Amino acid sequence: MMRLLLSCLLLTPSLLPAAQTLPEPLTLEVALQQAARADHFEILLAEAEREQRQAEADAVAAERGLTLDLEGRWRKVGLSDNSPLTDDDDSLAGLYLRKPLYDFGRSAAAEATAAQKLELSELQRRWRIQQRQLKIVELYYQVLDADNEYLRHNEELAIGFIRYDRMRENRELGLASDIEVEEKLAAYELIRQNRYRSENRQRLTRQLLAEALGYPDSPPDELAVPDIDVDRPLPEPDVLTLKALENSLRMRIGQKRVDISRHAIRQAEKADSPSLDAELEVARHFRENSPRDDWRASVYFELPLYAGSAADARVRVARAQHRRALAELQRERSRLRIEVLELWQALRQSRLRLQGALAAQEYRDLYLDRSRADYELEFKSDLGDAMVQFSDARWKVWRARFDFDLAWRKLEALVGQPLQSLTGETGEPRPGGDNG
Image 1 (tube, one colour):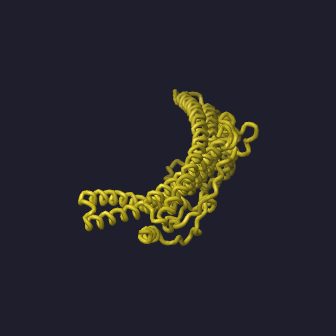
Image 2 (cartoon, one colour):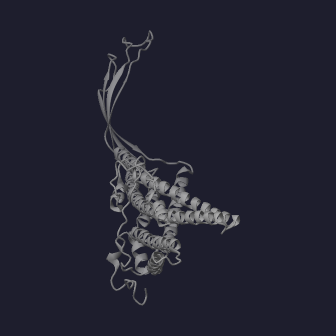
Image 3 (cartoon, rainbow, N blue to C red):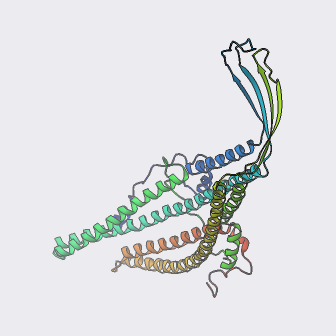
């Protein structure tokens, strides 16, 4: 029986071919290094947006620069009999040098808005990398979780088959009925479905991780289990919330949108401002005996007097967008406060779950040892159940550790700095104390 059990556990085919690009075993540190890969489509999208904002800012700044144009025309005219001119060639070639001198704040407002949008794109790029890091951690732990789940179901499958096969032998000896055999077969088929589902989950989680890392053609086969310290001191939620409101990228992005909307109001107010431009013209006229100037220097002043309700509508739209940005910032503050508290509670709960899971694992380990001893002494033993229960307890221990580390990283992302830098007298006592 033990030989058959060990054979079922060891004859597990490799899920995927060895990765050709990522190292084996893949570590979490190496996986996180892929979050900022320049060739990943999410980073390419962020970089394209940043380049677009940079180009828009450059275009706005260029509107105040010098422009040099070459203008010309080729024209023939029909002269009347009474015309004093004798040349019918009225062609012209000229160079025009233009420079805006002053627009009473219109271009400055546009440049300020463009600069704020550029800063927003950089914050969004950093936020996207941060979210990719959290997603990679989550997917990494999903792979490890799927592996542990598969091992548990694989043990159940081996034990289920042994029980079914034993019941068939008993039926042949007249010690069991057909209904008992069918009962064991139905239980075995259910276990087999669970094992197949966990095997599929192994493959799917690896492919999801490979896609997130940017290696879709080489999913990782083996992942190293990181060393997770769950005894790190945890600051109080009020401290975490205050720091999150100050440093969170989400808050900075929301505030930047408010700043953009404020500059947009000024830009709308300055849209119809007066303008003062200078122009230098150097021309060559091809008609002889024509009273034309060879060059001209001009200063143009434009003062809009009436534009209907268009100007007022632009300002009202900008102010409405500003009020919306303020409201969205307040909503984001509310969400952040709730998320910080939820993650803080999730960390404490994960610690309690881990303590319970470790106690259960210790019990199952001792129970498994006793079952082995009983089996070796040829006593009646539930060795198979003991093995499955121990694997289940071990699985729950790792799930608690994974959940703790993921919640810790999410909370650090919200706070904008390592949580350990905030610990001190405000830190929570370590597990194992009176408040553990």
